[in-house]
Amino acid sequence: MSANDLRQRILDAARAQPSPTRRASRQRAMLLIVGAAAATLALFVAIGGVRATQRPPSLIVGTTLGAAVLALVAIWSVLGRGRSMLGRSRRWLLALVLALPPALLAWKMGYSACYSPALALGPYRLGLRCFGWMHALAAWPLAAFLILRSGREPRHPALLGAAFGISSAACAWVLVDLWCPVARTPHLLLGHLLPTVLLGLVGAAIGRLVLAVRAR
Amino acid sequence: LGALFPSEKLLGVVVAKSVLKPVPGSFVMAKGARDEWPRPMATAWYLAAVEDGGRSRADRAMERYADGDETAFGELFDAIATRLHAFLRRRIRDEDLTRDLVQQTFENIHRARGDYRRGCAVLPWAYTIARALLVDSVRRSRRDHLLVAIMDDDARKVDTPDQLLGARQAASLVEEVLAALPREQREAFVLVQLDELSLDEAGEVLGVPASTVKMRAFYAREKLREALEVRKPAGRSARGSR
Image (cartoon, rainbow over all chains, first blue to last red; front, top):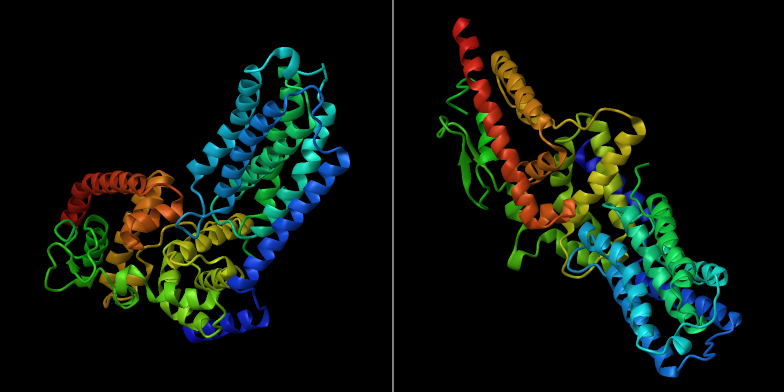
Protein backbone atom coordinates (compact mmCIF):
# COMPACT_ATOMS: atom_id res chain seq x y z
CA MET A 1 0.00 0.00 0.00
CA SER A 2 1.44 3.37 -1.02
CA ALA A 3 1.43 6.54 1.05
CA ASN A 4 -1.36 7.88 -1.16
CA ASP A 5 -3.48 4.81 -0.50
CA LEU A 6 -2.90 5.25 3.21
CA ARG A 7 -3.83 8.92 2.95
CA GLN A 8 -7.02 8.07 1.10
CA ARG A 9 -7.91 5.34 3.57
CA ILE A 10 -7.46 7.71 6.52
CA LEU A 11 -9.52 10.45 4.88
CA ASP A 12 -12.27 7.95 4.01
CA ALA A 13 -12.31 6.67 7.59
CA ALA A 14 -12.59 10.23 8.90
CA ARG A 15 -15.42 10.99 6.48
CA ALA A 16 -17.26 7.81 7.47
CA GLN A 17 -17.20 8.71 11.16
CA PRO A 18 -17.57 12.46 11.57
CA SER A 19 -16.18 13.92 14.80
CA PRO A 20 -17.35 17.00 16.68
CA THR A 21 -15.70 20.32 15.90
CA ARG A 22 -14.28 22.54 18.61
CA ARG A 23 -17.54 24.39 19.02
CA ALA A 24 -19.59 21.18 19.25
CA SER A 25 -17.08 19.71 21.72
CA ARG A 26 -17.29 22.81 23.88
CA GLN A 27 -21.07 22.63 23.94
CA ARG A 28 -20.97 18.93 24.80
CA ALA A 29 -18.48 19.56 27.61
CA MET A 30 -20.59 22.38 28.98
CA LEU A 31 -23.70 20.21 28.86
CA LEU A 32 -21.96 17.37 30.66
CA ILE A 33 -20.52 19.56 33.41
CA VAL A 34 -23.74 21.49 33.97
CA GLY A 35 -25.71 18.21 33.97
CA ALA A 36 -23.34 16.64 36.49
CA ALA A 37 -23.44 19.75 38.70
CA ALA A 38 -27.26 19.82 38.56
CA ALA A 39 -27.51 16.12 39.47
CA THR A 40 -25.08 16.58 42.36
CA LEU A 41 -26.92 19.64 43.69
CA ALA A 42 -30.30 17.89 43.35
CA LEU A 43 -28.99 14.99 45.40
CA PHE A 44 -27.56 17.41 47.95
CA VAL A 45 -30.92 19.13 48.32
CA ALA A 46 -32.63 15.72 48.55
CA ILE A 47 -30.44 14.65 51.49
CA GLY A 48 -31.27 17.80 53.42
CA GLY A 49 -29.09 20.60 52.08
CA VAL A 50 -27.23 22.87 54.46
CA ARG A 51 -27.49 21.84 58.14
CA ALA A 52 -26.28 24.51 60.49
CA THR A 53 -27.22 22.85 63.84
CA GLN A 54 -25.06 24.49 66.51
CA ARG A 55 -22.29 25.59 64.11
CA PRO A 56 -21.73 29.36 63.81
CA PRO A 57 -22.39 30.61 60.23
CA SER A 58 -18.83 31.98 60.00
CA LEU A 59 -17.48 28.48 60.69
CA ILE A 60 -19.67 26.98 57.96
CA VAL A 61 -18.72 29.69 55.48
CA GLY A 62 -15.03 29.48 56.36
CA THR A 63 -14.64 25.71 56.09
CA THR A 64 -16.79 25.54 52.97
CA LEU A 65 -15.04 28.40 51.21
CA GLY A 66 -11.61 26.90 51.87
CA ALA A 67 -12.71 23.51 50.56
CA ALA A 68 -14.39 25.16 47.57
CA VAL A 69 -11.21 27.00 46.64
CA LEU A 70 -9.25 23.72 46.83
CA ALA A 71 -11.91 21.95 44.74
CA LEU A 72 -11.83 24.70 42.10
CA VAL A 73 -8.04 24.54 41.89
CA ALA A 74 -8.33 20.76 41.48
CA ILE A 75 -10.92 21.02 38.71
CA TRP A 76 -8.93 23.71 36.93
CA SER A 77 -5.88 21.44 37.17
CA VAL A 78 -7.47 18.30 35.80
CA LEU A 79 -9.61 19.85 33.08
CA GLY A 80 -7.13 22.50 31.98
CA ARG A 81 -4.23 21.56 29.77
CA GLY A 82 -1.86 24.46 30.17
CA ARG A 83 -0.03 25.25 26.96
CA SER A 84 0.04 21.67 25.73
CA MET A 85 -2.40 19.34 24.05
CA LEU A 86 -1.21 16.65 26.40
CA GLY A 87 -2.54 18.13 29.61
CA ARG A 88 -0.84 18.30 32.94
CA SER A 89 2.44 16.58 33.59
CA ARG A 90 2.80 13.49 35.73
CA ARG A 91 4.40 15.55 38.52
CA TRP A 92 1.55 18.02 38.53
CA LEU A 93 -1.14 15.32 38.72
CA LEU A 94 0.80 13.35 41.30
CA ALA A 95 1.17 16.45 43.46
CA LEU A 96 -2.56 17.06 43.18
CA VAL A 97 -3.48 13.47 44.06
CA LEU A 98 -1.15 13.36 47.05
CA ALA A 99 -1.66 16.88 48.39
CA LEU A 100 -5.37 17.51 47.98
CA PRO A 101 -6.84 15.04 50.54
CA PRO A 102 -4.54 16.12 53.40
CA ALA A 103 -5.04 19.76 52.43
CA LEU A 104 -8.83 19.40 52.67
CA LEU A 105 -8.53 17.66 56.02
CA ALA A 106 -6.01 20.16 57.36
CA TRP A 107 -8.22 23.10 56.36
CA LYS A 108 -11.29 21.59 57.98
CA MET A 109 -9.49 20.70 61.22
CA GLY A 110 -7.41 23.86 61.31
CA TYR A 111 -10.30 26.22 60.74
CA SER A 112 -12.54 24.37 63.20
CA ALA A 113 -9.79 24.57 65.82
CA CYS A 114 -10.21 28.36 65.82
CA TYR A 115 -13.64 27.92 67.39
CA SER A 116 -14.73 26.58 70.74
CA PRO A 117 -14.77 22.74 70.66
CA ALA A 118 -18.33 22.74 71.97
CA LEU A 119 -19.46 24.65 68.88
CA ALA A 120 -17.11 23.28 66.25
CA LEU A 121 -16.68 19.58 66.94
CA GLY A 122 -20.35 18.56 66.97
CA PRO A 123 -21.80 15.28 68.21
CA TYR A 124 -20.07 11.89 68.17
CA ARG A 125 -20.80 10.18 64.88
CA LEU A 126 -18.91 7.38 63.24
CA GLY A 127 -19.30 8.92 59.78
CA LEU A 128 -20.99 6.15 57.82
CA ARG A 129 -23.59 8.45 56.31
CA CYS A 130 -20.94 10.97 55.28
CA PHE A 131 -18.98 8.06 53.83
CA GLY A 132 -21.98 7.11 51.68
CA TRP A 133 -22.91 10.66 50.66
CA MET A 134 -19.35 11.45 49.66
CA HIS A 135 -19.46 8.62 47.13
CA ALA A 136 -22.96 9.41 45.91
CA LEU A 137 -22.24 13.12 45.42
CA ALA A 138 -18.84 12.58 43.81
CA ALA A 139 -20.10 9.98 41.33
CA TRP A 140 -21.68 12.59 39.01
CA PRO A 141 -18.69 14.87 38.45
CA LEU A 142 -16.42 11.82 38.23
CA ALA A 143 -18.61 10.32 35.50
CA ALA A 144 -18.65 13.63 33.63
CA PHE A 145 -14.85 14.00 33.77
CA LEU A 146 -14.34 10.43 32.60
CA ILE A 147 -16.76 10.81 29.68
CA LEU A 148 -15.14 14.11 28.68
CA ARG A 149 -11.69 12.61 28.32
CA SER A 150 -12.63 9.06 27.40
CA GLY A 151 -10.04 7.47 25.08
CA ARG A 152 -8.05 10.71 24.91
CA GLU A 153 -5.23 10.30 27.40
CA PRO A 154 -2.08 8.87 25.81
CA ARG A 155 0.35 9.36 28.68
CA HIS A 156 -0.93 8.50 32.15
CA PRO A 157 -4.60 7.49 32.12
CA ALA A 158 -4.54 5.91 35.59
CA LEU A 159 -3.00 8.99 37.18
CA LEU A 160 -5.43 11.32 35.42
CA GLY A 161 -8.29 9.04 36.53
CA ALA A 162 -7.01 9.26 40.12
CA ALA A 163 -6.87 13.05 39.82
CA PHE A 164 -10.44 13.04 38.49
CA GLY A 165 -11.51 10.89 41.45
CA ILE A 166 -9.82 13.15 43.99
CA SER A 167 -11.20 16.31 42.35
CA SER A 168 -14.73 14.87 42.32
CA ALA A 169 -14.29 13.96 45.96
CA ALA A 170 -13.22 17.55 46.67
CA CYS A 171 -16.48 18.78 45.08
CA ALA A 172 -18.43 16.32 47.22
CA TRP A 173 -16.41 17.39 50.29
CA VAL A 174 -17.69 20.96 49.88
CA LEU A 175 -21.32 19.85 49.92
CA VAL A 176 -20.87 17.26 52.67
CA ASP A 177 -19.14 19.97 54.69
CA LEU A 178 -22.27 22.10 54.41
CA TRP A 179 -24.40 19.16 55.49
CA CYS A 180 -22.27 17.55 58.21
CA PRO A 181 -21.89 19.35 61.56
CA VAL A 182 -19.18 17.02 62.88
CA ALA A 183 -15.51 17.97 62.90
CA ARG A 184 -14.10 15.25 65.14
CA THR A 185 -10.95 13.65 63.81
CA PRO A 186 -12.11 9.98 63.67
CA HIS A 187 -15.31 11.09 61.93
CA LEU A 188 -13.40 13.18 59.40
CA LEU A 189 -10.97 10.36 58.73
CA LEU A 190 -13.65 7.73 58.15
CA GLY A 191 -16.49 9.77 56.69
CA HIS A 192 -14.61 12.37 54.65
CA LEU A 193 -10.99 11.48 54.05
CA LEU A 194 -11.36 7.75 53.41
CA PRO A 195 -13.96 8.23 50.64
CA THR A 196 -11.69 10.83 49.04
CA VAL A 197 -8.84 8.33 48.93
CA LEU A 198 -11.16 5.55 47.74
CA LEU A 199 -12.56 7.75 44.98
CA GLY A 200 -9.00 8.43 43.88
CA LEU A 201 -8.37 4.69 43.66
CA VAL A 202 -11.66 4.07 41.84
CA GLY A 203 -10.82 6.91 39.44
CA ALA A 204 -7.41 5.37 38.79
CA ALA A 205 -8.90 1.95 38.07
CA ILE A 206 -11.64 3.27 35.77
CA GLY A 207 -9.31 5.83 34.20
CA ARG A 208 -6.89 3.13 33.18
CA LEU A 209 -9.69 1.35 31.33
CA VAL A 210 -11.64 4.30 30.00
CA LEU A 211 -9.21 7.17 29.46
CA ALA A 212 -6.33 5.36 27.77
CA VAL A 213 -5.70 5.61 24.04
CA ARG A 214 -6.13 2.05 22.81
CA ALA A 215 -4.95 0.29 19.69
CA ARG A 216 -7.52 -1.66 17.70
CA LEU B 1 32.87 6.83 13.89
CA GLY B 2 33.95 7.19 10.30
CA ALA B 3 37.46 6.70 11.67
CA LEU B 4 36.45 3.75 13.81
CA PHE B 5 34.59 1.94 11.08
CA PRO B 6 35.92 3.34 7.80
CA SER B 7 33.91 1.00 5.65
CA GLU B 8 30.71 1.59 7.54
CA LYS B 9 29.91 5.13 6.67
CA LEU B 10 26.35 4.50 7.63
CA LEU B 11 27.30 4.12 11.26
CA GLY B 12 29.15 7.40 10.98
CA VAL B 13 25.94 9.04 9.93
CA VAL B 14 24.05 7.51 12.81
CA VAL B 15 26.58 8.66 15.35
CA ALA B 16 26.83 12.07 13.76
CA LYS B 17 23.09 12.26 14.16
CA SER B 18 23.43 11.07 17.72
CA VAL B 19 26.29 13.21 18.89
CA LEU B 20 25.78 16.47 17.06
CA LYS B 21 22.95 18.76 17.87
CA PRO B 22 20.56 19.32 14.99
CA VAL B 23 20.51 22.88 13.72
CA PRO B 24 17.65 23.79 11.40
CA GLY B 25 18.92 24.36 7.89
CA SER B 26 22.39 23.02 8.58
CA PHE B 27 24.10 19.94 7.20
CA VAL B 28 25.88 17.50 9.45
CA MET B 29 28.55 15.29 8.02
CA ALA B 30 29.91 12.08 9.38
CA LYS B 31 33.47 12.34 10.61
CA GLY B 32 35.92 11.07 8.01
CA ALA B 33 33.37 11.23 5.26
CA ARG B 34 32.84 14.95 5.11
CA ASP B 35 32.53 15.25 1.37
CA GLU B 36 30.75 12.02 0.69
CA TRP B 37 28.07 11.95 3.35
CA PRO B 38 26.38 15.27 3.77
CA ARG B 39 23.09 14.70 5.46
CA PRO B 40 20.49 17.35 6.12
CA MET B 41 19.74 17.24 9.82
CA ALA B 42 16.81 19.55 9.37
CA THR B 43 15.24 17.47 6.67
CA ALA B 44 13.00 18.75 3.93
CA TRP B 45 9.83 18.21 5.87
CA TYR B 46 11.21 20.11 8.83
CA LEU B 47 12.10 23.10 6.70
CA ALA B 48 8.76 22.90 4.95
CA ALA B 49 6.89 22.54 8.19
CA VAL B 50 8.33 25.33 10.31
CA GLU B 51 7.17 28.74 9.29
CA ASP B 52 6.34 32.03 10.92
CA GLY B 53 6.86 32.33 14.65
CA GLY B 54 7.30 28.60 15.18
CA ARG B 55 3.70 27.92 14.14
CA SER B 56 3.95 25.00 11.79
CA ARG B 57 1.86 24.11 8.77
CA ALA B 58 0.53 21.18 10.78
CA ASP B 59 -0.57 23.44 13.64
CA ARG B 60 -2.41 25.73 11.27
CA ALA B 61 -4.06 22.83 9.45
CA MET B 62 -5.15 21.36 12.80
CA GLU B 63 -6.47 24.76 13.82
CA ARG B 64 -8.69 24.88 10.75
CA TYR B 65 -9.72 21.25 11.09
CA ALA B 66 -10.78 21.80 14.70
CA ASP B 67 -12.91 24.72 13.50
CA GLY B 68 -14.70 22.49 10.99
CA ASP B 69 -12.70 22.84 7.75
CA GLU B 70 -12.82 19.22 6.54
CA THR B 71 -10.21 19.72 3.82
CA ALA B 72 -7.59 20.60 6.42
CA PHE B 73 -7.28 16.98 7.55
CA GLY B 74 -5.57 16.06 4.28
CA GLU B 75 -3.16 18.95 4.79
CA LEU B 76 -2.47 17.76 8.30
CA PHE B 77 -1.70 14.31 6.92
CA ASP B 78 0.69 15.80 4.35
CA ALA B 79 2.41 17.84 7.04
CA ILE B 80 3.11 15.14 9.62
CA ALA B 81 2.53 11.68 8.13
CA THR B 82 6.14 11.25 6.97
CA ARG B 83 7.53 12.14 10.37
CA LEU B 84 4.98 10.01 12.13
CA HIS B 85 5.80 7.06 9.91
CA ALA B 86 9.52 7.53 10.54
CA PHE B 87 8.89 7.88 14.28
CA LEU B 88 7.06 4.55 14.37
CA ARG B 89 9.37 2.82 11.91
CA ARG B 90 12.33 3.50 14.17
CA ARG B 91 10.62 1.52 16.86
CA ILE B 92 9.13 -1.40 14.94
CA ARG B 93 10.23 -3.50 12.03
CA ASP B 94 6.82 -4.40 10.71
CA GLU B 95 5.84 -2.03 7.89
CA ASP B 96 2.19 -3.13 7.89
CA LEU B 97 1.90 -2.51 11.62
CA THR B 98 3.59 0.86 11.18
CA ARG B 99 1.05 1.95 8.58
CA ASP B 100 -1.78 0.61 10.67
CA LEU B 101 -0.55 2.64 13.66
CA VAL B 102 -0.16 5.76 11.52
CA GLN B 103 -3.79 5.32 10.49
CA GLN B 104 -4.92 4.78 14.07
CA THR B 105 -2.99 7.85 15.20
CA PHE B 106 -4.77 9.99 12.61
CA GLU B 107 -8.11 8.47 13.59
CA ASN B 108 -7.44 9.44 17.20
CA ILE B 109 -6.52 12.97 16.17
CA HIS B 110 -9.70 13.10 14.10
CA ARG B 111 -11.86 11.97 17.03
CA ALA B 112 -10.24 14.46 19.40
CA ARG B 113 -10.18 17.41 17.00
CA GLY B 114 -12.76 19.27 19.06
CA ASP B 115 -10.35 19.21 22.02
CA TYR B 116 -7.60 20.94 20.07
CA ARG B 117 -6.42 24.04 21.87
CA ARG B 118 -5.50 27.09 19.88
CA GLY B 119 -1.75 27.57 19.69
CA CYS B 120 -0.75 24.08 20.81
CA ALA B 121 1.78 22.05 18.85
CA VAL B 122 0.31 19.07 17.01
CA LEU B 123 3.45 17.03 16.53
CA PRO B 124 4.26 16.13 20.15
CA TRP B 125 0.61 15.25 20.63
CA ALA B 126 0.62 13.02 17.54
CA TYR B 127 3.88 11.35 18.63
CA THR B 128 2.48 10.70 22.09
CA ILE B 129 -0.67 9.12 20.67
CA ALA B 130 1.42 7.02 18.29
CA ARG B 131 3.65 5.93 21.14
CA ALA B 132 0.69 4.97 23.31
CA LEU B 133 -0.87 3.02 20.43
CA LEU B 134 2.41 1.26 19.78
CA VAL B 135 2.87 0.25 23.40
CA ASP B 136 -0.73 -0.94 23.60
CA SER B 137 -0.45 -2.83 20.34
CA VAL B 138 2.74 -4.58 21.41
CA ARG B 139 1.30 -5.33 24.81
CA ARG B 140 -1.74 -6.90 23.19
CA SER B 141 0.00 -8.90 20.56
CA ARG B 142 2.94 -9.74 22.82
CA ARG B 143 5.19 -9.24 19.88
CA ASP B 144 8.67 -7.99 20.41
CA HIS B 145 8.49 -5.00 18.15
CA LEU B 146 9.98 -2.51 20.51
CA LEU B 147 13.47 -2.73 19.17
CA VAL B 148 14.97 0.46 17.95
CA ALA B 149 15.47 -0.31 14.28
CA ILE B 150 17.17 2.94 13.55
CA MET B 151 19.19 1.73 10.62
CA ASP B 152 16.66 -0.20 8.63
CA ASP B 153 15.79 2.54 6.21
CA ASP B 154 19.40 3.63 5.78
CA ALA B 155 20.53 0.07 5.23
CA ARG B 156 18.46 -0.11 2.08
CA LYS B 157 20.36 2.78 0.52
CA VAL B 158 23.75 1.02 0.24
CA ASP B 159 24.99 -0.35 -3.04
CA THR B 160 27.14 -3.45 -2.54
CA PRO B 161 26.62 -6.61 -0.47
CA ASP B 162 29.71 -5.71 1.60
CA GLN B 163 28.27 -2.33 2.41
CA LEU B 164 24.96 -3.92 3.23
CA LEU B 165 26.63 -6.39 5.57
CA GLY B 166 28.66 -3.63 7.20
CA ALA B 167 25.56 -1.52 7.58
CA ARG B 168 23.63 -4.35 9.15
CA GLN B 169 26.46 -5.08 11.59
CA ALA B 170 26.70 -1.43 12.44
CA ALA B 171 22.96 -1.25 12.86
CA SER B 172 22.86 -4.20 15.20
CA LEU B 173 25.76 -2.77 17.21
CA VAL B 174 24.09 0.58 17.73
CA GLU B 175 20.77 -1.12 18.33
CA GLU B 176 22.34 -3.39 20.92
CA VAL B 177 23.96 -0.48 22.72
CA LEU B 178 20.75 1.53 22.68
CA ALA B 179 18.73 -1.44 23.89
CA ALA B 180 21.05 -1.77 26.89
CA LEU B 181 20.37 1.80 28.01
CA PRO B 182 17.77 2.47 30.70
CA ARG B 183 14.36 2.96 29.07
CA GLU B 184 13.99 6.61 30.09
CA GLN B 185 17.39 7.51 28.70
CA ARG B 186 16.82 5.57 25.48
CA GLU B 187 13.47 7.22 24.85
CA ALA B 188 14.84 10.70 25.50
CA PHE B 189 17.83 10.04 23.26
CA VAL B 190 15.77 8.65 20.39
CA LEU B 191 13.21 11.46 20.53
CA VAL B 192 15.81 14.22 20.61
CA GLN B 193 18.55 12.81 18.40
CA LEU B 194 16.75 10.60 15.92
CA ASP B 195 13.22 11.94 15.81
CA GLU B 196 14.66 15.46 15.99
CA LEU B 197 12.16 16.83 18.46
CA SER B 198 13.10 19.87 20.48
CA LEU B 199 13.72 19.36 24.19
CA ASP B 200 10.36 20.94 24.98
CA GLU B 201 8.52 18.73 22.49
CA ALA B 202 10.27 15.59 23.74
CA GLY B 203 9.40 16.66 27.27
CA GLU B 204 5.75 16.88 26.27
CA VAL B 205 5.83 13.41 24.74
CA LEU B 206 7.47 11.90 27.80
CA GLY B 207 5.61 13.99 30.34
CA VAL B 208 8.75 15.37 31.98
CA PRO B 209 10.41 18.81 31.99
CA ALA B 210 12.74 19.72 29.13
CA SER B 211 15.66 19.84 31.57
CA THR B 212 15.04 16.18 32.46
CA VAL B 213 14.97 15.20 28.79
CA LYS B 214 18.22 17.06 28.26
CA MET B 215 19.86 15.27 31.16
CA ARG B 216 18.59 11.83 30.11
CA ALA B 217 19.66 12.34 26.50
CA PHE B 218 23.06 13.53 27.69
CA TYR B 219 23.62 10.45 29.84
CA ALA B 220 22.42 8.21 27.01
CA ARG B 221 24.82 9.88 24.60
CA GLU B 222 27.69 9.48 27.03
CA LYS B 223 26.90 5.80 27.57
CA LEU B 224 26.57 5.26 23.84
CA ARG B 225 29.90 6.92 23.27
CA GLU B 226 31.54 4.84 26.00
CA ALA B 227 30.06 1.61 24.70
CA LEU B 228 31.20 2.32 21.18
CA GLU B 229 34.66 3.26 22.44
CA VAL B 230 34.91 -0.09 24.24
CA ARG B 231 34.05 -1.90 21.04
CA LYS B 232 36.54 0.05 18.98
CA PRO B 233 39.65 -2.16 19.60
CA ALA B 234 37.64 -5.34 19.09
CA GLY B 235 36.30 -4.05 15.79
CA ARG B 236 39.76 -3.08 14.59
CA SER B 237 41.49 -6.28 15.67
CA ALA B 238 38.83 -8.38 14.03
CA ARG B 239 39.30 -6.44 10.85
CA GLY B 240 43.10 -6.75 11.19
CA SER B 241 43.01 -10.52 11.68
CA ARG B 242 41.06 -10.92 8.48
